[in-house]
Image (cartoon, rainbow, N blue to C red; front, side, top):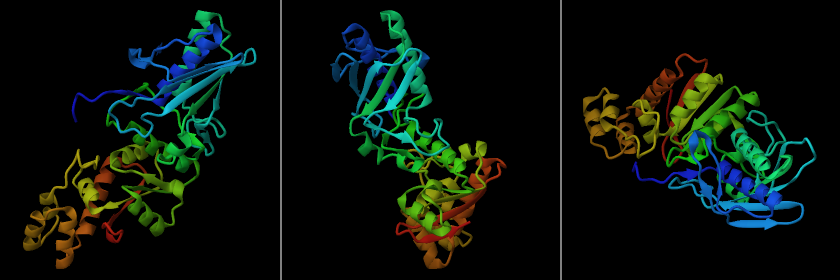
Amino acid sequence: MSTNLRFGWTTGACATAATTAAYTALLTGAFPDPVRIALPKGRTPAFALAREALDAGSAFAAIVKDAGDDPDVTHGALVGSTVRHGPPGSGVVFEAGPGVGTVTKPGLPLPVGEPAINPVPRQLMREHVARVAAEHGGSGDVVVTISVEHGEELARRTWNPRLGILGGLSILGTTGVVVPYSCSAWIDSIRRGIDVARAQGRDHVAGCTGSTSERVAAELHGLPEDALLDMGDFAGAVLKYLRRHPVPRLTIAGGIGKLSKLADGHLDLHSGRSQVDLGFLASLVDDPEVAGAVAVANTALGALQVCQAAGVPLGDLVAARAKATADGVLRGAPVAVDVVVIDRAGAVVGRA
């Protein structure tokens, strides 16, 4: 990955900047533009305002989220904050505006019924409200309503509906910074998915590499939607989090290509970060002639077809080795693992 990739800013950082600008305008009548905020780890970025509005009782500011060079679903989204005075002594009260979700299931770091504004962004906004109040003679008692334009539509492309966050996006971020291709939001969603499954009392979850393997796992085991983890390429994220937060049973389901990589010890299954090793697949096969044909196949699927024609259960062999990798990462945690390998059509071609 190029070292020249641009960092971006989280929805939490954008919401903090918008809140800072709006509260400043509520107290002074003028919007700071650009508005500068202080993030954890010493960064002090400045954000240009995309929209602003001021009336007698409230102020609104909005910022276009720049995720840098990360392929983030919220890149370009308009993150807004409306600030109005709250009752004396109320502190900072958060509300979900249009496009921001509400928590409806236990297991997340927020109580059911709360706006899906995560704890770190809330703390950042509280700190900036206090700073603005100190500078301009405010009480710091405010109601902050965060909104994301088209957030409900964008949220359908995230884990939020499955996690029980309904009506829009979550306001996320721990450092305020989006690191390109860190996929931190995806990994965070995997962890929250496990938290929700545990809170719902699920004793069996499935980590699936895609929609076809998810359908197969659900049908094989009768699993409800909140027990299905959209693992994607992040097998390691699922296994490491379950090591610390166990669920009694884990099914890993995926295509022959990705699970061949897990069998070979890779925990990140992305094509840019790990490759199918046909020599490794050949080493699983006892028959020298079939092994030779596997070694020169074009793809893992091609190797599978060679083995199927010869009556060699390559899918089962891959599943067994993938299970061994998973068990190694779990390090004795009380999680029973089984593996389901499928082909592109969704047919089960191996199990362990």
